[in-house]
Image (cartoon, rainbow, N blue to C red; front, side):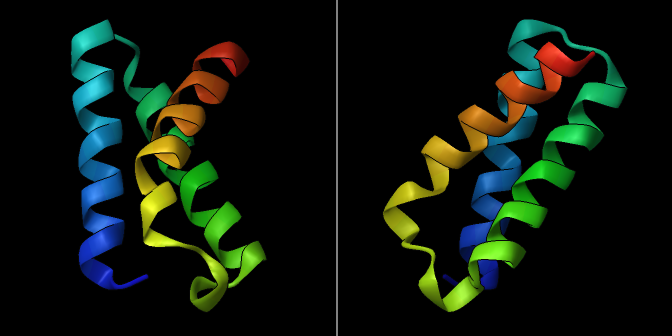
Length: 66
């Protein structure tokens, strides 16, 4: 995974946030979940094919928390 892949994932989170009209706090929590998961797993162990799935899961989890 590269910096470009992270940017793509955060952009997907932002797109979903705008589409569903979530609170701004949900956006920031989702980005935090996204980053913490990649950090815990290890950036070299995370497959770039899973970026969109992780983005979607992150925004849904943060919306549930809010």
